[in-house]
Length: 248
Image (tube, rainbow, N blue to C red; front, side):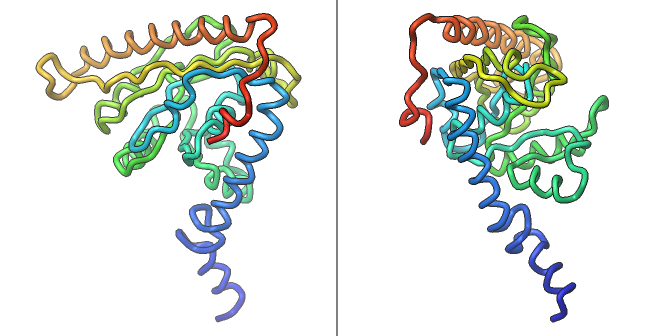
């Protein structure tokens, strides 16, 4: 086998050098390790309810979105290889795309309804994956909860996966929009009780009004988690959560 054929063999799906192969697994573990070693300590992370992120089976993490730090910090709190939706621009050039896929991200076209990405997310959930979805869509400029879209409700209803609302305080100050590097500040994460997926009034298939009502419930849960996260971040004299508890 010549070098070109050997490389194609090793990089094909499931191959040694593929993003879903051994090399991709090692890249994910290395990235997660750096998050735990560096970011957890830099931000003196305080967290409650994070053990809920470690439940088995299909699960949707639904955090608020204030910074590019939100997804990595949540992913670092679990042993699971969390799947993320990421804007398509993050996958170029190809080596960066390989790394993004290795850590669990797959591309979505920003500014439009990318049905292919949603179907891919649904397929991963039906396969038992943990998926992170930002219900607000884009980063918000304050602690106030922005408009919450029905995409999370749709994924939960179609997959049967429970949804975990997550509040995150401090990441906007640590790395606001436009910043290239984070600064040291206090960060707190509060993971709420899981929400059962939306259903119809008789327990059957959820329809549009059912999903809209469920989305309102999710927004209330996010509001509660965000208020608790801000209070936890501002609590004076409290040490960060011990690393032995944060790392599964």
